[in-house]
Amino acid sequence: AKTTFEYKNTGNVDLVLTNVRPSCGCTAPNWSREPLKPGETAKIDINFNSSGKAGQNFNKSITVTSNAKSVTLYIRGKVLAKVVEPTSPVRIGN
Image (tube, rainbow, N blue to C red):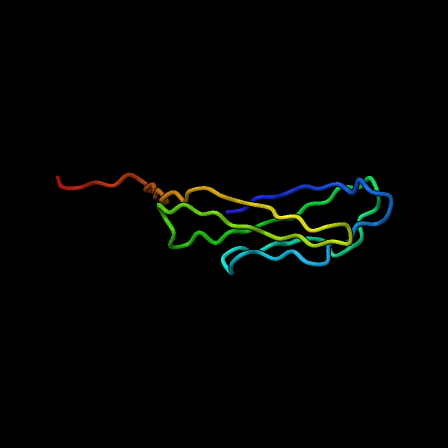
């Protein structure tokens, strides 16, 4: 499962994300390490490995540390079972 958080530098100096730390190993963030100029926007992509978690609820946090302040992002939901559709007609019996 994937989601994206978009953020904007509303300050007067470059914004630098120094760390983006998930609450567990099943959640992986991807973000730019480059300074963000005032007025610019960027994204933090979050990948959640839902393998083996069908039918389960999840609630994960991601702590973002920067030269401005620390904030916590949250993702939550329920992992649905994967439905496999046949790729061609299947005949059963006569």
